[in-house]
Image 1 (spheres, rainbow, N blue to C red):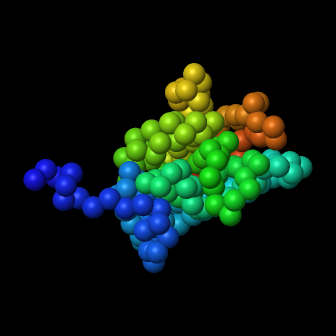
Image 2: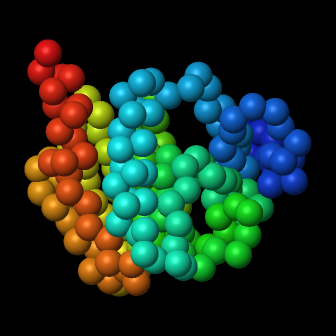
Amino acid sequence: MGVANVIESYSYEDYKQWKGDWELIEGMPIAMAPSPMRDHQSLSMAFSHALFDEISECEDCEVVYELDYIVDSENVLRPDIALICGEESDYIRKAPKIIIEIVSDATAKRDEKVKFEIYEREKVLYYILVYPKTLFAKIYKIENNIYQKQGDFTKEKYHFDDLECGVELDFEKIFKRFKKEHSS
């Protein structure tokens, strides 16, 4: 009997019954406990506020925080932050325009490889990985169906010129407070 025959696979229907915080990746449950560290939470809030301010005049888009992205029956992800446009559901069902993941030691492999591949496959337009310990971000953009790295950002601004809301993120401004905390 092969390993594939003894490993249980779960679906979104199973996922809906679970208590606590989970993700479902290729039918495998991934526990999301304990809660993220303070730096993670603070950076998430800083990026959420920056995006929210950028889309304040855009009626079709919104910024959501840790909302389930139901990719398909075997994949339910919970991005730290997502910019969604034209979403009709209570959950994310269409590929977001931007997903931001705050990377920790515990989530690095999942964020940099597993989620990267799923978001790329689903054609999430921009995927941003934020590193709290070193205060920098990597931006990837879908071009010809694959992610192309747009660069590493610490003090720069990045304008998402192909979004209907005309979003720009100022990484120096977002990271400024955290740099003070790291230097003390």
